[in-house]
Length: 264
Length: 112
Image (tube, rainbow over all chains, first blue to last red; front, side, top):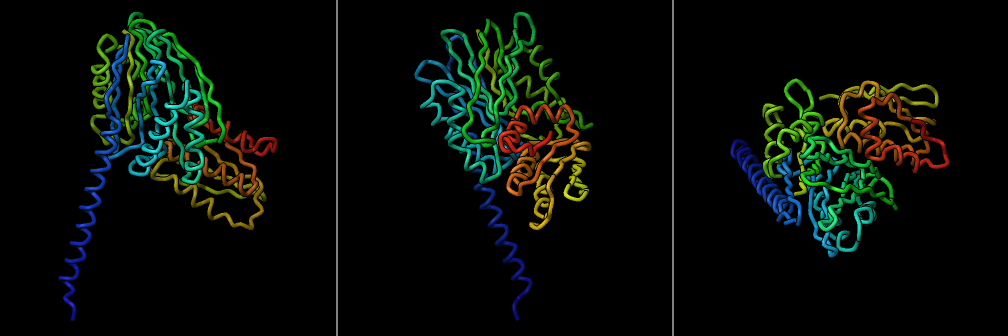
């Protein structure tokens, strides 16, 4: 007669081994994502820049990146893959590859989004997924930020000297994976001294407190106003702290990502 | 977090009343109710009614996209009704209406 008790223990041990292996692989995946996301921040002429992504789970679907163009401009991208966790992280890595490849071969942010959409459209349709992306080229010589949008939140622009929100010209475009053969319109903004451009994903403004209230855009703007005279790393930390205080450390429901660029 | 989808049939029209939160934990329900529609049904119009939608996240938007593509495949009309301003803003930002316009171009099958 088989030893039922021992058999059960063996089965359990087998599950534990699988759990440990899976956990180790998730940790490795997390490490890959952290390394790729938190690459070297570029040193900008006439501006400072910083970015951070905090996944809600061990890995996440938010994305930001910088790319130095041959023209001397810096390309900035921020995005959000549909969903959360491992599936979103896999598509985030796919998006990163498409962005870097597109940046090598395109002269402006609208063209880059078109190239990324062309590269990813079929895969995303098959997977019933999509990515929102906001892409901007910073020209340190002219102080001009040219941008295009594929379904993402417009960044906030705050002028530190006047302590006022500077409205960016709205550009909209279909999310990546929404429709094939998309052309993305561009707009530009001439940045002035002490202008802060705050690129973000919805995990910040949709962070909830225990009463179910959202952090929302107004609180974010207020926090940026209060810290506008600090450097970008300190402003970034202040936003994280403010969201944490608001949510009273309740469970983070969505990935949180921000990129800050401030003209000196 | 919960989602209930009330289905109201009216001859060739079917209304899905979306009640609650349409997010990563509930969005699969949309796909389930769509899959339950028999291939032989004579539905001509699918209405998604957002009157009681409390919250939608990116996975919820993905389920709306699935419904739109499903309507294209099955040659239904699709109509999005009673969208709150905050949700409309998200749909506009992500290009949902542009996608519908494009997929149903010249067909006048999507009414928003």
